[in-house]
Amino acid sequence: MAIDHKTRYTNKYMANTLVSGIKPSGSLHLGNYHGAVKQWVSLSDYTMFFMIADYHALTSPQALNKTAKYDMACDLIALGVHPECLFYQSDVPEHTELALLLSMITPLKWLERTPSFKDQLDKRSPDWITHGFLGYPLLMAADILLYRATHVPVGTDQLPHIELTREIARRFNHVYQTDLFPMPQPILNNTPVFVGTDGEKMSKSRDNILPVMGSESDTLDRIKQMKTHRLRRNDPGVPEKCSVFSYHKVYNPDFLSIKVACETAAIGCVDCKLTCAQAINTALAPARKTRATLSHSSLDAGAKRARLHAQETLTQVKDIMKL
Ligand code: ADP
Image (cartoon, rainbow, N blue to C red):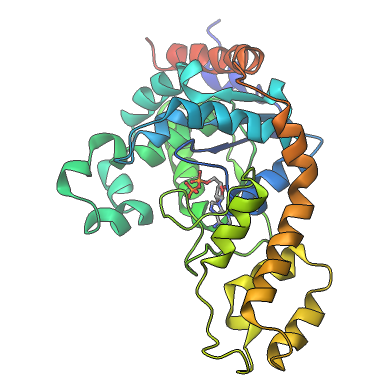
């Protein structure tokens, strides 16, 4: 008797499987740490896959930098990500093959309406509105579905991509009458978007980051250059409007004293910035010390483990699609 796909693949995925990733398009910054990595290392009870998304990095006009990719791996390991759970996306070619197969059932209009695509339409040069850039959320769906992930830790900026992944999974399951793919759930962290040194969202694509593994003097220099709102030393400040104070709130246990001192002009911006840089440097010192002991990491073990899971899913997808 022929066994239908539904029976063969039902519940084959592991409950509590988690996938997340980061683009190696620059240095790991405090926004990445608070918005993603801190949560990655705090979660347990999941089978975890963390990828350094080098294919995704190619969707930006900046050229990929191998050093940045290797540095990202060492930074993540120094922050506590287990190397066995970590891999370079391009070391697992199944990501691209699944993306191609899913592209056959993904309507173009689903990709064209993605907010990150629409947002960039009038910002990018037309030559950089590429097929790969349009397909970015589809590749992300493949990244998640390849491990039949049930959970994806993300910031709120990524929610539309998770919704699209669910639509693609639902459509695949419907078209091929299977329940191979679970519907992945976002795990949202409560961290607000971390602002950069220019007051906008901290991002590798802007020149506004505080690198987690920067030197103490680099951190101080970047904070010193930040614009603040007080025109004269004796002007009272409005800490809640100041990005430097937003860092104090995260890194300085004594931030309430800074608040009062700023509001009453008891402290000037120069001293406030100095205290802020010291607080950040003190908090990051242990991770930076560990980082200094690490050099280029191949992540072969992580890729091998990821491929075992990836190949299993891909074999089933190809069987279901009659390839
Ligand atoms: P970037 O914009 O710096 O290239 P990525 O796209 O590689 O960052 O994002 C990696 C993770 O870091 C994602 O989960 C994203 O939500 C999170 N993240 C990135 N920037 C910030 C920020 N400024 N504040 C909070 N989380 C962020």
